[in-house]
Structures are given as structure tokens and as C-alpha cells.
Amino acid sequence: MNDASKATELYGVMAEFDSPELLLEASEKAYELGYRKMDAYTPYPIEALPEAVGFKKPILPRIVLIGAIIGGCLGFFMQYYASVISYPLNIGGRPLNSWPSFIPVTFETTILLAAFAAVFGMFALNGLPQPYHPVFNVPRFALASRDRFFLCIESEDKLFDLTKTKKFLSDFKPKDVYEVEP
Image (cartoon, rainbow, N blue to C red; front, side):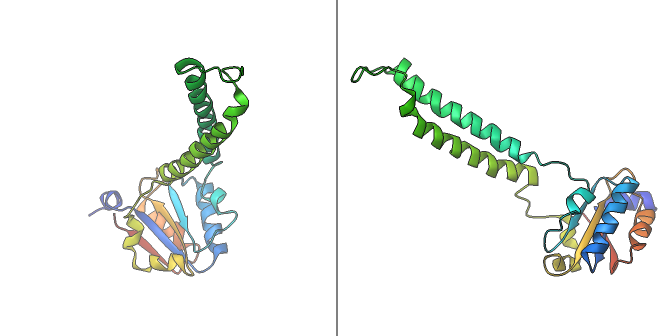
């Protein structure tokens, strides 16, 4: 079996590091060399790591804002339709479109749709639910939630070559380099 056919059968190559500094150094260098399909796994957040692996500005705040705007408009126009168009009642001489009385429901629908947009947007952007991921096939990956740091370069990356990628990751003195089966 040659390297090219084996690479298509792999999810990627993953290196295990003892310290966040080594992981950060390897991530920055991989991004600098042109690797784009990679991910890092750590037991706690590392401040510079998202930029090092190529994450851009998050889109979730925009999704939440759009959900909030839609919720506010929906709440207001739902009440407007009921009070002015569908079932107009002139009570006490007040105008049919009495917007101050619409504020509480408008506020609540704004918050409700913003919260739904946040939850469902987060699920969609994170690819959840995901009960299985190929990195779980590496036995030592269980340490990613305790005290180890992992960098996985996926085989779908345009620069991925099994031997070159393994050599590249080995240059950073990881504890070990693993081939990740799909």
C-alpha cells in the first residue's frame, strides 16, 4: 500500500505534546506553512491558539443579533396585527396602535429568539451533536481532557502528505505522533 492510498484512508495525523507552548509553536508553524485543515485539543483554553490554527472572527454574535432583530420585529408586528388589523377594539379612546403597551411582549420575543439563535447557531457551527469523532480512535486522546495537548492535521488538507506531515510534527519533539483512523 502506497502513501497516497493510505493517506486517503486516514482521518489525519495527530501529535501529542506535553506543554501548551509546544502545541502553540507547532500550530503557528503549521499555519505559516499553509496547513488549513487542522485542529488543536487542550484541557483548558489557550489564548493565542484559535488564531494559530486559523480561526477567524466568530459569526455567532451576528447570528444572535439577527435572531434578536427578527424576534423584536415578530413580537411587535404580531401585536400590531392583532390590535390594529385582525381585531381592532377602541378601548377608552386610546389609539389602536398603542406601542407602549407592546413593549413587554416585544422585549420578551426579542430575548426568546436571540436565545434560540444562540443555542441552535452554536450547535450548527460546532457540528453538534457529534457522538463520534475519529480522534477518539487514538487511545491516548483521553488525556486531552486532563494534561496533554494535541494537534491533528487532517488528510483532507491540500498540503497533507503522510510522511512529510509526520516528519513535520516530529520536528517539534512531541511525545508521540499518531495516525488517526477514520
